[in-house]
Each structure stands twice: as structure tokens, then as C-alpha cells.
Image (cartoon, rainbow, N blue to C red):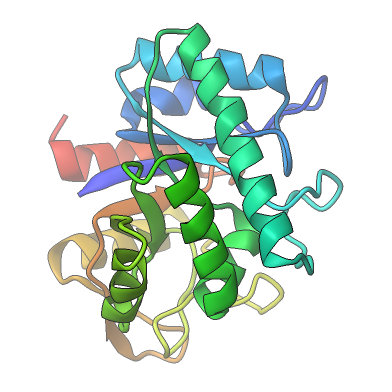
Length: 244
């Protein structure tokens, strides 16, 4: 099981996260592509940092929504959505090429990620865009109880899926993330984060906000890089998974 984190989400003089401190503890870095956050300089520096620490680089494309940090739903046609998706992948790929680095996977951000998991039309638009751009890049999606359905859809486009679970977010009884607007949607204590992480690693399940257990089979665990506990969370996951 790998550790991934949303990275490179600063913009100009505005700083977010502690990428330099967190990066050494990661296996995968989801690097923002300039639409929901980041800029070319931040992207380049984050790619350099990932390469320095041997961390796999992933593109983290989102809706074109800098003001809302990509966490607001947008209505776009499938053609428009696929084009914006490809545009962002190409931007990060160019940065990687300039640094002799390799783009290893794709993970949508925020509202786009949630829309992908709720709307098959959005999911298929992203699969289509990825097939056109590079079908060899795996797509990271949420580990949900009905994961086989997403695998079947992705297989029709020749796309491999990697499933992820979240250690710092609360789940509902459907095995999906609770909306950020709901009370208790994000875990605010390291103890709670560690408890959920251990359960995901050892039991392959999560306990929902209502106290039910839901099976979650994940390939990777996600940390939100903009969270105040991103560094200690990365450190404890690294210790749990890699023993160092």
C-alpha cells in the first residue's frame, strides 16, 4: 500500500502546505496542474522535489477554479471537460520532461474527483481524455464497495485504476466521503487519523460516522497536503507501512 499526497498547491506569493517537509515520507505526489491551484514555477519546483526524493509523480487536474480551490462543482460538456483534462496533463508532462522526470499516473482533484465518482458521464469523459492522451497512465479513483463497476467501465477504455482511501476524512455508510459541509467530515486529531489508518491497513475497512464498518480495499492512502496535520500524518503512515 502506497502513501499519496496532494502537493504543489501554492500559487505566486500564496503558500499552502509544507511540501518540502512532507515529500520525504511519500510514495506518490499528486501535483496540481495550474487550474485549481499552482503555477508553472510551483509545478517545476514540486517536480524537482519529488524527483529528489524518488517519489512517483502524478498529475492532479481539477476544475478551472482558482478562487474556489477546485472544490466547487462546475457544469461542463464532456468535450470541454476532456479538453481541460488533457490540457492539464500536458502542462505537467512538459514540466516533467524539462526536469528529466516521468509522469506516472493521474488523480483528479476536489469537485472533479467527486463528480467522477457520482456521474458516469464525467467518469467516462475523463477516461476518454486519458485514453487520447496516454492510456498507459493509471487513474486514481476512490476505493468504494462497488469498485468492480468502475473497473469494468475503465476496462472499456483500456485504463488501469488505482484505488485510494482517505485517512483524514470521514466516511458515510455507502463507503464514500462525507461532504466537507457536514459536521465531522474531516478528522482534526492525529489519534483519529492514526486509528482510521491502522484500520484501513490491517482490517481493510473504515468505521463510518454512524459507527458502521464498511469494507475498503485500497492500493494507496491519501493525505491532504493542505491539512494542518499533513506532516505528522505522513510520518506515522511511513512508519506503519515502511517501518522507518
